[in-house]
Amino acid sequence: MSAASTVVAIVYLLSACLFIVGLKQMSRIRTARRGNLVSAVAMALAVAGTLAEMGLVDYRWILGGVVVGSAIGAVGALRVPMTAMPEMVALLNGAGGAASALVGAAFFYTHVVEAVREGTVAEIVGGASALTLFLSVWIGAITASGSLVAFAKLSGRMKGAPILLPGRHVLNVMLLLGAIAMGIVFAWFAPGTSLGATLLWALFATSLVLGVTLVIPIGGADMPVVVSLLNSYSGVAASMTGFVIGNNMLIIAGAMVGAAGLILTQIMCKAMNRSLASVVLGGFGGEVSAEAGKSEYQNVRAAGVEEAAMVLEAARNVVIVPGYGLAVAQAQHAVKELADLLGRRGINVAYAIHPVAGRMPGHMNVLLAEADVPYEQLWEMERTNSEIRSTDVVLVLGANDVVNPAAQNTPNSPIYGMPIIEAHQARHVFVVKRSLASGYAGIKNELFELPNTNMIFGDAKRVLQDLVAELKQL
Image 1 (spheres, rainbow, N blue to C red):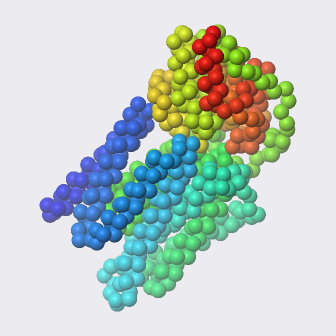
Image 2: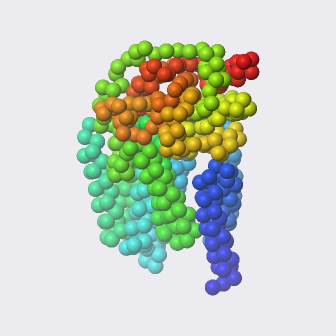
Image 3: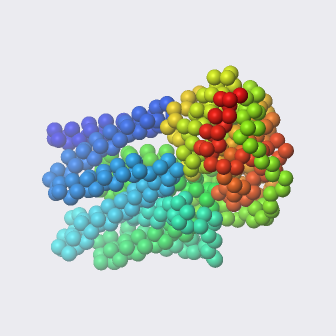
């Protein structure tokens, strides 16, 4: 092994180790920011090692890509608000999938099509190599189009409710079998023939359609699971691309992303009472009764800030349940101020974090970390529910489906069986929302009608600021 190859191997090893350390640190709020930085350094090393391994290349194109990509990333980091971060993640997943598919196609043209044109066969891929190329294009294209649909649903550019095409299951099976058939023919019979290019682009088009048809039947309530699954897909596609181009670092990093995304998907499925098989097959969440969402609200009680402040001031234990409405209002600093004020009065304050609160896994954790909320105050759902009966006040801020008792009481509900934060078990519940609009599942929230619940209508940030002002006067 040459000195250059040894250096590249060492850089790859260091990069892989840093990826592992960064991923581990990102699993805890206290170290998540440092883990993100460590992972960024690992990626920089991986890119540097890849360029060194490639040797003599046209760095003008590479430099151009670095400048454009860095500019897009910087603008996204600075301008995309926390409320739009799920959409940003969906786009990044799609970009990763598209990159894998395009790299696979580029490799095919440079190592196969050009070789055929020149009458040589030395670099023609076949067998296992062609199979990994097929998987790279197939999974990458599915990830790209599926992620764009997820982005459109999350951003409101597409109907959030399930879009159920006639005969969608038959269509998906036909697309799946067609892709597999093209992959078999491509890998074992036609990689070095003119038919290979035709099959590759047919596979690419079929996979794009399949990505769309797999995601559009999925409702907005299930988008956190979809985002984590597509993240796993992008990792698998990247790993397959690593096999195609013979890059060990890409294989390792892609496999890590794929495994981490799959584990996260399983956690999300458990949190939403979904099976992993139904997620992989697509269309889950669309086969439920619609009756649970048609009835109107009855006996909803509204309260003012003054009344809520008096109840909070007399409480001993307060649990805050953050939701997407908190993120929309950018009220994380306001809720931190309220919690600090209550804490100085000897009131125990905790934040109940549901695994799928917000629009992506960990959305609420990141939002509260931005306001420097102490890690010790963040309670997981299991701990919250074990102590909720002795809680004096639960303050729900923009959350909806994750506190809906219909998950336990209404068998025909779309969310029936989903573990929830049992806010209805507390002595007093105040729900801060702009209106009685439904959550992602599109159904009414039975919590709003319970006798121990009062609604405070308004923007979460403004309501919290008014609560702070009122408490300071008591």
